[in-house]
Image 1: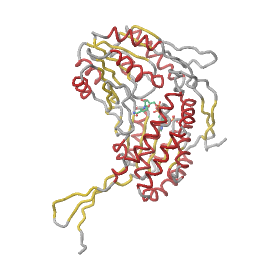
Image 2: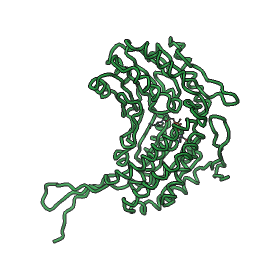
Image 3: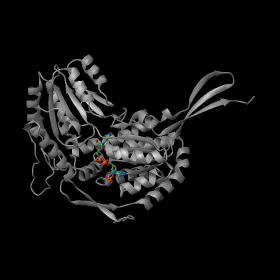
Image 4: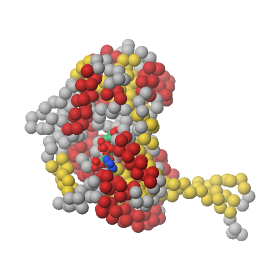
Length: 469
Ligand code: NAP
């Protein structure tokens, strides 16, 4: 067993509390050694031709796919999501590597006609320098892939700190990158004391960029640290998506979409809809149908065949969901299905039943905070304007959904939502080729495609007067 300067920590399967591994508990000393190594190597990686860097990324994408089964098992074991979803996450992670490799041409110089005799302009995209990534437990492979792939493509050495619950996916990815030819000093993954590691990296002055995915509170704290050394930041923070269903929506599609968007990872994703705003003319029918479908989902450990709802990540997560349900019911919400945990024999009390609550309103906790659990709170609305106003009243603005029968009105509603990603009659908008990120308390910066790559470069403009004859 490897030990860090602060000892070791166990990684638990949230479905059973079984110890699946022990990993080093690193602290400031390992963080500093990793930074020293990355900083010294940075110029060499930056000078590596982009095509060569792209080769490493393409090989990584292929190997991630080739190891889909084993990676999916690691994800399910440490974060609890059903194995089929974990396999989807593996493919999604591989896509970030292919996408970064395909977009590498965006780093080419741009030539400007300055309309001044004898002087021309060249715009270069230079690697920002050593980058730090801090990632959450809910997509332990994909959230890291989204950061590592563009950083390496841009020519940045990368430091990474995965969540304490889920370091194994990160280590597995690092191993694959090394096998695919990444020089070891380009990537350092440290498990351990988040505060000590982050403080060492962010207050040093040599880390030039932080990409953080996690809660808004932690994001704020890290931003304050980054202010000291003017570290550039991308902040992928909490979400509180609205799911708007217009009067003319196809209810079958809306029910299917609601299940898909809401119950992925038992409701523990940043783009899970939290506020269902349904036109009054169809609210009862939607509520009844979504409840019937939700109650049929199979609750079981993620490794069990056919599992659709796995455990919540830890007991604190269960308590949060319980408190949101209790608050909604105390304030006049009507429980349609679920509302409690399902005790499975010999397993921790962490499996929350898919829950549907009608008669919700914006005063409830589930309408003001991210629940991060399998709860569908439904509010009936009288107009598109009311739906848009309620949706935009949240300080969060990551994702939103609009389901309706007319392309022009669904698109018009989508364009009025204050959020970075909107699914229009589509419940799975995330795609490695597209920009992903939020506004307001959900942060800033984009991941995916050329937008993600550009987060890791600085722009240098040269005004060139040539003296050559
Ligand atoms: P979290 O508590 O903020 O933790 C995220 C990461 O930050 C972990 O690696 C954690 O390390 C680290 N961290 C915590 N405190 C820290 C500190 N004081 N200094 C430095 N690092 C610190 O968030 P979470 O509960 O794991 O993740 C759920 C949140 O992430 C939700 O709000 C969700 O919406 C959001 N999320 C957003 C996106 C997006 O793309 N916008 C995607 C996924 C999730 P330890 O685990 O070691 O404490």
